[in-house]
Image (tube, rainbow, N blue to C red; front, side, top):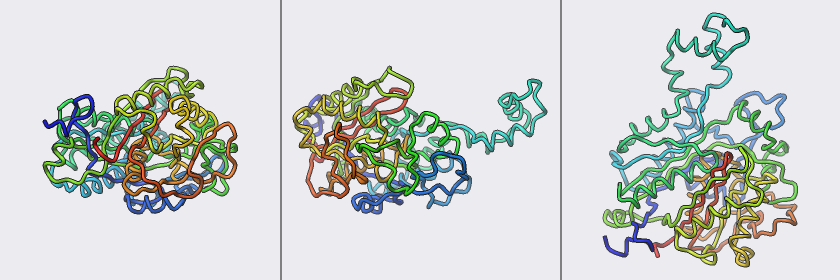
Length: 427
């Protein structure tokens, strides 16, 4: 391999040759980018299920794709399929993909209505009120293959593998909010290690349900500013009160730069560096001193061979929760120091909400698009800045500015942190 196709550590350079995305802003990269840079919000009132009695009645759901069955597996699969079709078309690839699949998918559970329906099929439990035992008894007594696939964690990746002809056993992972970035990291590592010249990295999340809203509400994680919905997500502001749960998907086609050039593919960006660190502080809360996040960012920069002054834009995790935004600011301050005031930092979640499992990949696509177009997407709803968080958040309106290196952060519940460094050129 020519040195022109190797990075600073002698590894194959990893290129992005295709991208696809779906969020509450629309289907496809073109529509999403126009809305995102236009400061449009996709957050709206929930109509999929009743919200009476819930503290949060808004989300960034994807309601415009026709899905035959209303469960999270079908929604997640449908979005992943559509973004993969878009990414492969952009990459100029058809037929069997001939490379591995790395999928980030939400934890799959049967929704409560389905659990009660199954439980009603079985005889009363010998332990009164033991709905779980009744549920298991129903599954044993009357097999339901359709329902089984609807709650099977690996079903989405298996269907994608069959649909697109990927090679080997597909990998499904779930590392909370870092999942999308982690899937990309696995694809990067597979190419760097010489195991493949090409990888399909997909992240999808169609898991918004009443139960999800209740669970996150019990953690005091969700915004309760329901009216108007589009004003609820306000990262880095003084009056932020929680994130807005959302759905979406993104697919990136990764190839070794050498293989991409050999087939005449267009290179949209370079996956230059990946960082990953665990946070042992709490099951859901991030360490308030930002230690693990600091280590994650530094690991990504070191992996990329770029110093603190080399980053031109940061696509922040920026959830709009009081604690996480503060932690991320402290982390970026510790890493970038005197450089931070001159680095634009914006949050896509102000417009699309938090797409959970899909977020890292969705934001990676938008980060690459930032470099391609020379346009920085804004952080909307930035009317009341937090005096303790001093950042250039590209407030409210997009900005024309060419950047050649972007950092994208994904800091997840449960202690998983991941950061990606992307560049416009290999060098």
